[in-house]
Image 1 (tube, rainbow, N blue to C red):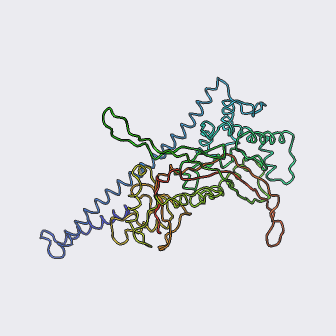
Image 2: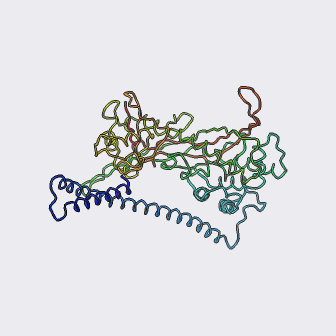
Image 3: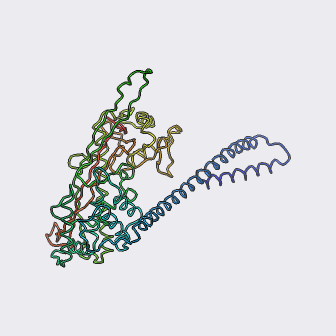
Length: 485
């Protein structure tokens, strides 16, 4: 019952109690009136408790929302303050992104400072939200073993220069573009800079300007892909991510003054390859000519399809020329598979079984991932008045199991009650599922699209876009896969 329904019922009970008391007058309650009074009194106590719990939960939820909004505001303010402090420390001078200096010859510190200064140019960033700005700043400031921020900084200075932006818009919208000398030099400079960067494709196409490039501005917060929100995401400027993982250090008790036993952990060196993802985007010949508006529309078009492709492959990708989906990776490891209790059935005992099989060290940061259909099936576990399996009523969506969040993927299998092989859900610590994103996207112009039936032009052109990314489980033991075999 909702809070309003509980309050309404309490009012009804009190009204009926008043009627019974008035009817009895100074005499005692007898017969049916006495039984009804006792029944109503017990229900009133129950409803009062329910109301107290519901109001407490409502206050807690409201406080949580306020806290999240406050934290988001504080985060945004910290970012702005950080940028102000950074600008204020630039030796009492304002950093100018472009002053005629050859960007390819700038040192790491200077190229980073100039790239950060680009973010102060309104026309370049007006289509970006706070999360995307924070993502770009993070990529410019943080270095990793497989990621060089100077590559992104140089790409940003070259691709966000007015000459490259105007040239790029002509190249991807016109079949026979006429470039000025300055625009031609800007395109050549960007192409040469890409050739100097290790692992960056140089053949064909035109590099997407950094501040509309989805490999750079696509953030977990803005993604419809649940795996980007919950998994470990690493940006690279090479062709592979190489790491070291371990199941943990083994400890032992040893006698005093004796040699310590050999408790060395087993180390693994996972490698995640970046595969080429491709997309085709048709667009009308009437595409806008105003660059800020064009950039915003381009960012939207490029992000939507790319994000959807990744959502698919992060669930069920084969790993052959594409990312390893989490289901594919776990299905190949019998040590992390948990079979349902009864073939072809699904119940609360199966949820307990897969949860119990997950090692304790991974439970604190675990999440459940399943299809909406499987979530609905779990929601219905309490329909037979089996309160121990009660999860949610039909007014809501299953949000937590075992007090851990539930995420939904439309690419996870639906529940079909089959007696054959069927994956049901995954639970685990998704910090051990690694998504690798190599920064940089390229597009090429397809001059005219033709109707397949008539062979006539449709008045559209197309963009052929390609980028590199990969994904894989780097520690299968952090997960458990519930399946029907």
